[in-house]
Image (cartoon, rainbow, N blue to C red; front, side):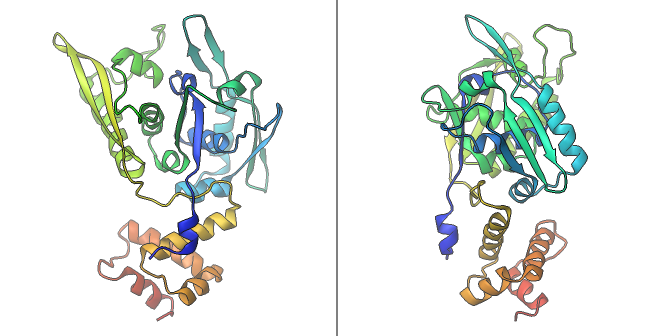
Length: 311
């Protein structure tokens, strides 16, 4: 039975203009996670020059991954130099997401400011926007999965994407340079399917609210087009409000773990959540369970309680 706290947990939706969804850019998985966190904090009431605080501990709790100081500095430095290429019939806009990024030492906080020309693509969107679940986007580890998840989310109400040429699709993933100055990546279609498409499909279908498949299309003998089919599915994980303080987010995650172990007796739950030692033991137990360092197929909750003197 779900706890009252779990029942009240809501899904955080991120919105961005379709021009951003379809833009050409390159980012690492760490950079994208920082961007997802930033997007979740934007509001239509924000004024130019607003500073947004992203807590590193929040990122770690929500993604299950740890980023060290150097990785974060490298990522924010790269984000300051990343360029989105947004093209329509009238113009080609080359624009960076950030005006500044500052890492506050000893506080585990990154302070971000978005560039002024980017604001119309991110704030107070009323039409032509893509929405997707923050927790789903953060749960993906492949940068291609994160990128394709954004892309197919634009078409989730239709059931399928438009048909992209492979060149067009690779441009968006920055696997091919439109000017031909950089070598194309994953030229062999078998490698492209194995390392990009299948990895992305597996992760999206396992960890997000969408069920996605793709179809490669031929002209003559060679594959030159791709189309994605997308349907909604029930998320496989509890969605956690990103704006919660780190301690609250950790408590929500601990409640989720207890529920998954079948530990729902109110006093036991309270005793574990109120003890930092037991809470840390819970996270360690779940990690070892997921990585097969602990075997407990029949009653993992009972084993956790026994190991920690609670039964």
